[in-house]
Length: 199
Ligand code: AMP
Image (cartoon, rainbow, N blue to C red):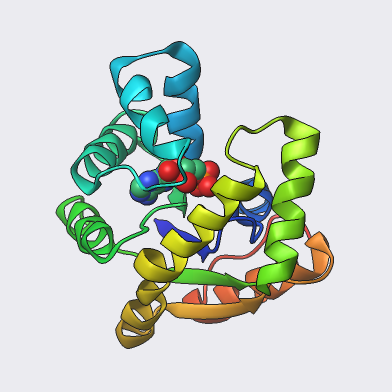
């Protein structure tokens, strides 16, 4: 398997680059944010709970999101030749859980792709996405909370993965294709084997 984490602040392009990765490498995409938004739209019990956190820009409690992730890995992603984790992990306990979940399934995390984008650009991108898609948490108040949560709870993971030797910094400003090419070159250098299906 080839398992990757796409890491970065909200608005850093994780969703956009995940779409290209799954297309080029045939990997399974798990976006915890998308899974949660689907639960909210279907008004499931998890969706009703999740909405209270998401609408404020806060994180869903670790135990809930870890259970959800296990469920997706064991059911929807079963048999996949690799997984792109987008929006997970967001806390150190989630990173520890991911390591255990993958190890228990006989695999590991191969690389953490860190999309690095200046904060003013992140805000501009999210405001534009909110206008284009109507995504409820892409409004200025919630964006500010999400960025604060990112700095306090998620950004420490960069140090965590640097120590593990899996963190791969990528300049996340510029054209979608140029950013993707940097990611793909980095992954291919790091793993040594997997090649893009198309250039
Ligand atoms: P995203 O689409 O990844 O930006 O996620 C949207 C929102 O879903 C976040 O602001 C959080 O409220 C929630 N969320 C998504 N993934 C996680 C996670 N791994 N841990 C906690 N909350 C999450």
